[in-house]
Length: 161
Length: 448
Image (cartoon, rainbow over all chains, first blue to last red; front, side, top):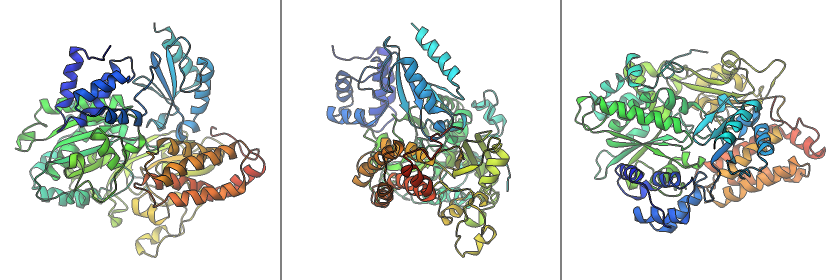
């Protein structure tokens, strides 16, 4: 079935278009909008939709999707748990948090837990170095973390039906 | 010399600091009124007097950059704000966007007017969702109050500000990659020339400024550019005013501190950030993000004969005021002024390994020396970390990194080569012992 947006999302798409002097510039914001409406991933149908609406070649849109880390080319779990492992976070335990998450969720970074609830990802510097170590769950930052804190956060995500 | 200030950070931590009401009750939106009452030429002159060196890491004078825009142009002009903060160790722009977004909006109005732009795009990295939310909120409030739109502050000069989002790419912090990304393309840097002032966003004359550079402009205009510049001990170097400094890593109180330019790393680390945990000493400091060289605490740079440097001659790098020119002259780089502190518990081999993984991941791939070089260096470090490296490969790191520098479309290559060269040079013995002992000679840790 081809991808389509809700009426509300279509309105947002039009808002986005009104901000730029041409349609191509709306590519990234519109891809985000569509990804959010598509279980957080960009399928080929989404690429076709965006290409048509913005009058771009689908190769161009695919080129954009494949360049940026935050466009998911595969369906992720219900939540994405990003653990920053760049230097300042690593200095304050970021790698220990990453390994703990891998053990707890039973996956390597990049994988999704068996219950489909959490995809574990590594993140590069999230601009929260003063409050390291840091994780990002979907859109929210959690800072000044301990392993116990991380466990509490994962507990909440797992309970989240 | 520590002279703490609160021009940007006065509201940090206060409830609803990001609202228009809070911003105005603390004296906001005064600088822009002054600017809009001046001619464009006068605004640029005032900005030049303030000597605001670009606070994104390159340190290029803001007023000078504004003056590069064409005086007459058939094409629309654009102000583009670089809010793609992603330099490892850097976290100051985020604080402005989350806790004092109106300072940036006010700066955007001043900047747009200065360069004859009517539209301003704030390119915010996608991960900073709260920043985007607060910025949109501030824009909405400003529009409602008549500070943005067709007649900001009653002046017949339309200014619209939009928040644009990235999608997870450090390289989009490079101004031409940012412009490509804004245009809806892959975030690949462009060759310069042409420079953005000639051919920028959408093929039109554009200026790209860092968040903090613009956010401090209202203060500079309210106070007067000359007075603002003179706050700085480095005013004789045309490095003026006050700015945000960050400290992260192995210190007791990591965070953001605002002070007049002139503060040293020793003062930042020991007097403001609480020093290192008990019993720990400094292995190394990185002055302003991982693209800057790491320094040993007792390094004494060889400063040039210029008499302005006389006061700092013979001093440790920890005691030289953090400035664009002082650090360039010290064989270093000021970068973002966000210092990373590595204690003696840190394994420098693992530290470099971490950093080179970052660069390999973030390379856009256009230029062979960077694309291949970053991966190659990371793989050599993988071998070293696993205890399978050789001394010959250590020399190879130097050769590969040296071949990246200056041979790429953009400065990312230099940013990747710098830590590779600096860590291996300054911790040569650590690396050699590590290789010879198969990885047994070091702490094998990054944490305390």
